[in-house]
Image (tube, rainbow over all chains, first blue to last red):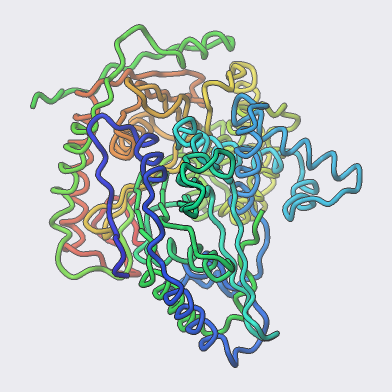
Length: 298
Length: 308
């Protein structure tokens, strides 16, 4: 990846939350071009053509490449660690409405909602039935994991600083290449922040209506453990999927990776080379059909 | 730079009611450390220097140093050798202090209590909880393989300690942002050396101007010095990852029915970092300068392992 790859400098008086918020709010305009997106699309299609199976490839799959972990071949089953992100994202999203003052109350509201859906018979999230079937102590540990995860994201950003734009908590992208046998590309980002040149996405009038608005968007991905060696590919993956899925010019200018366990932060400014790097990773997935066992979205 | 040479003062109380624990968690009136990111970077450099001798050919897998709290309890419990009769130590003969199964189960009970779950049968509650945790299946299997008498004794010990916890633990204000099972990771030497940990309970918001977090460890089975050692490592990692040391460390000993606290200042964290630095350097030297994948560092301390 020849894009701007940096370990951001944090000012002496800047807290980690201030630094992360600044990195999102100061995202550059997207440096990707239509030619670059088309090149990445062709690379994906060339790689996907002739693949057997209709599996899907997501950021988790990308993260497993180059690792000796056999987890990629294991069937997916929910665990507290796998559910915490899904529950936590819903909780933070609920918290941003202002209805819940703390991560704990927001997580409890999410879990109460699932319990209510089980009674009403309305559709539940993918982890809902599993969670409901757990003995109470095990269900409580899932709740505890979700609270810890949600608390970290809740306080990771200075949300008031991001109020000038639109924050989407839990963004899920998908692109299905033409052809039934090709794997579906999926990607998620924990926060996607966007703005237009008027400062307020989609609401405020642009200063010059004759000039098309330049939308800027940045994504935050929350990792676990320490930053992996292939972090730039992991960060580029959701930008690639967003670019392929978008009929318009891509808007993601930057993807920020944050590993709260270690406090590490990595920044990838998205350009054509970054998309190409992410598209090239498909050639390393030997059997996309077996990659169906990936962590589902929330 | 002035470095405190002796262990910071530890205050121990025998809590009888939730208010006693609450007073411990709130801490004393001592001024809290001021957030200083430049200083925390200096701490990191100290550790980077210690790990620097790990230079040379990059190892295929990192050396992982330490593991704090319940996670390690589970791993120890699942692999702990049992007595000749297949039983671990019995809770009544004093050897229970070394039984990692007890530590893992009480650690789970602590997490349930902290998150406000009413205990019914602490032993069964802990087993149910552990069943969905990482390594939980191995732990549950290890408990099932115990002879009846040993299993019954373990259940009694977990029930006694769990009920004591439920009796003295206060409900926590959600505004304290309590987090349980929080992982800490500090990669050094380009990721060839990784210091990891997990605290049973973290309280307080991320840094603004002064230190605001408190780390709590629960100990059912470990000697106090080992528990403190691991909390000090956690304090150093927290300082480096967030720029702010915890203002206080607390050990809740369910075996001894005590709650001990240690107020931290920058000197104390510096002291802990120096200890960790010595330990890292010793481990790396014993390991021959570079990690060997899939092999144990035979001469290293018992809590050093190579990730397989």
